[in-house]
Amino acid sequence: MAGERFDVIVSNPPYVASNDPAVLRLAAEPAVALTPGPTGLEALETIIAHAASHLNSDGWLLLEHGNTQAAAVAELLSHHDFDRIQTDNDYSGRPRVTLGRASSPPITSSLLSSSH
Image (cartoon, rainbow, N blue to C red; front, side, top):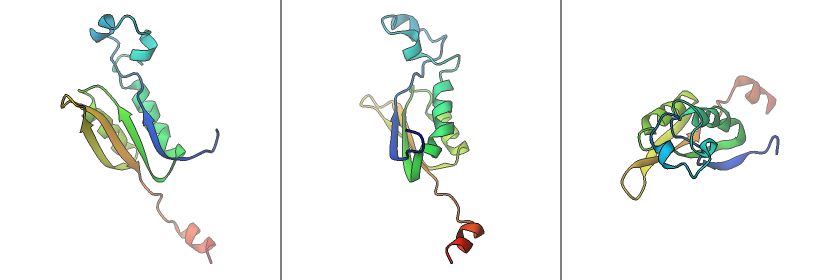
């Protein structure tokens, strides 16, 4: 719903690069479920860019990604002002989930003056 905000958003978007040989091995899956584009980061970039506007202050965004994408996802989160960024490994020891907390909006003088 428009305007709705959440404490946590979890996403397992498509993240396989379109030229990755894994796409051929996973032919039983529709391509749109696997690959969002050439780098595999396109869906992750879109989600990260818009997630903060759907999160409560100090809300968390958790993203599953490919085991070679952790650094890029962490950089995207940082670029969009998420903090407390960390990556967790799957049971095979591969980095597969990165999360970040939406930074609290700064208190501005207009907010302070309206509280009097």
